[in-house]
Each structure stands twice: as C-alpha cells, then as structure tokens.
Length: 424
Image (tube, rainbow, N blue to C red; front, side, top):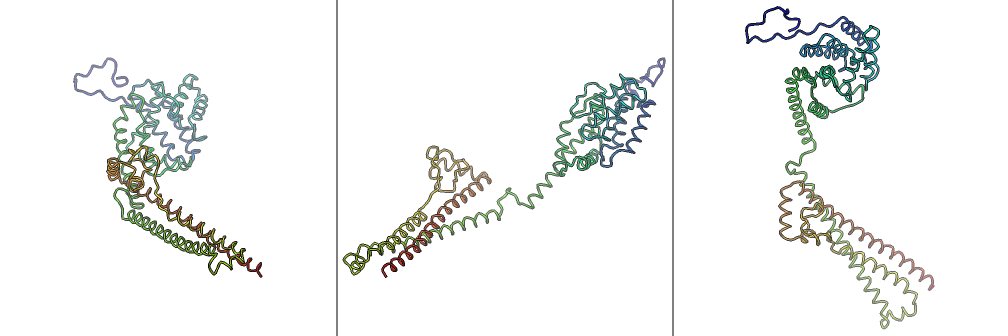
C-alpha cells in the first residue's frame, strides 16, 4: 500500500498474511493551525452551557475524520479538506444555536481566506459543513464521512453518558425539559431512524451502533417497567378488580337506592296529604244540604280561598304522582336494532335495556362483557349514570310538589284573611 512499501519491494510470499492497516494521515500544517485557532477560540469564547457541543466533541469529530480518511485511503488533499471542516463545523455555536452550521461556514471561509486557501477548496470545505445540518443532504463521500464522524457518538461505548450531556445542554440552552422515560424514548426513536452514510463509517460503526441500540432498547424497557410499577403503586391498576373499586360501586348503588326510596316515601306522603285535603274541600263545596250548606250560601266569597286550596292540592298531588311514577330509561332505537348488544350506550345490567334484546343477543353480550373488565366497569358506570338521571327527575318533581304546596298554603291563608276582613 502507499507509504508502506517501496515500488520495487518484493511482494509478501505468505498468502495468509493480513495486509497492514494504513496509518492515520498526518495533519497538514494548515490543519494544525486550524486546530490551534479553534482550540483557543473555544477556550476563550465557548459558553459553559454547551456541555455536549464542546471542544471535546470537536476533537472527537476530527479524530474520527482522520480514522475514516485512513480507512477510505483518501488522498492528502481530501483528507485536509475533511479535517478543516471537522475543526470548524461547530464554531457557529459561538454566535447562534439553531442553524449554527451556516455561521460555521462563514467563520471557516473567513479564516481560510486569511490563510490564502484556494477559493475552490474553501467552497468544498464550507459545503462539507453545510451537510451536517439536519435539513441538508450529504451527497459526496466526503460529506457523508463528516456527517458520520459528527454522529459517531451513537457508536461510542459511552453513548448514554454523552446523551445526558446533550439533554442537559437542551434544558439550559433551549429550555426543553424531558423526563427520563421521555428522553429514553426520544433517544430510541432517533437511533432507530439513524443510518451511517459512508462506506468507511458503516464498517467502523456498524457493530457498536447495533450494540448501543439494543442497550438503549433494554434501558427503555427497564424505565417503562419501573414507571409502570410506580404508577400502579400510586394509583392502583385495573389488571385485577380492586376491593376499593368494588366498594365504590357498592356504595354508589346503595346511596342511589336509599335516595330513590326516600323520594318515593316523600311523594307518597304528599299524595296522601293532598288527597285528604281534596276530599275535604270537595265535600265542603258540594255540601248544600248539610249544616255547612247555609253558611257557604251566605258567604260565597269563601269559595276563593277554598278554590286556591283545591288548586294547590291538585298541583301538588300531580307533581308527587309524576315523581313516584316508575321511569325506565331505554332507547327507542333498540326496538329497531335489537342485535346491537355490544353498544357502549346499552346497559346490559339494566332490565329496561336488555329486555329489548333477544335472548341470544343478550347472552352474547353478557359473555362479551364478562371477558372484558373495562366493559364491565363501563356498564356499571352507565347504570349508575342513568340511576342518577332518574333520581334527578324524581327530586325535581318532588321539589315542585313541595313548592306548590307551600305557596298554595300561603295564598290560601292570605285570601282567607282578606275574606275575614271583608266580612268584618
């Protein structure tokens, strides 16, 4: 190989002998000057919050570029261009974070022009730097090498520690805060979508990158498992029915039944009371031949308070009867589509719904319900909801009945007092 043996040296006679690896090319004087310039520049001006895109990262990229150049047996001119681009590719961070690559191109072009570097070569170096931007495409083999060297941390044995440096940098520089599970998922997604482009990069990083992806996958599973256990410990789980859930539903059903029974008793009391009042009033108003008859005939104005009281009793008893009237929540469309036994709106635990289904569809729906715990809880919650709707209607009508009765008594009393004053 070039630079290893002279042109007239005899060929090796051992067919099993492995060819010696090409040594890393020695940097040119211009590359050494660029290294010194960038090193001093970073030490003097680089912000401390750039924990990942530091001088160490630039040194690593330059080192990897030398290794890739040697593996690809690049000519000295191309090696020089690649190394110059490696040293300048992150200098734009001194000016701006997002889009720093374009500022790095300007800095590299200015410095190279000051050092009398040919204009055509300056264009090549700046285009190499441009290719490291996430939205730019790497077309040439040199550009692919620089991009691979820039992302070589993904194939580093300490890639997780390097990733934490980037996480810290984003938190400070960009204000982006990621939880540990979210960061692990982000890293996994990025690694799954990443590919090394150059042939030399694929050969150099393929094995370790594959190991790192598997390690990240294992780490993500471990974090997810830990987070799941923590969540189950704090909030419980639906994996198995919990006693607290069963107690909650039992208590809700019991409270609804008690409230419904109370409403029915109050309605029954109002019905009985108003029925007696109506009987007495009707008897009084129709008692022309009794002892009350002459008094009522002499004072016909008494019909006003008696009429108010009669209307009061009538309105109150009607509201009470409506409150106590059985109310079965159902859906009209069930009559048209009785086969819909798995619809979430249909509560298979309530007779008002399941009696609209055929026996076969009901059994099918119940078997399906018993196989899925979430469906069972959904039906129980639906049942509680519709029980609440019935209770709401009962108590609204009951409140109306009591209000009518109270207002009617007040008006009856006031009108009776006015009649007495008028009589006097």
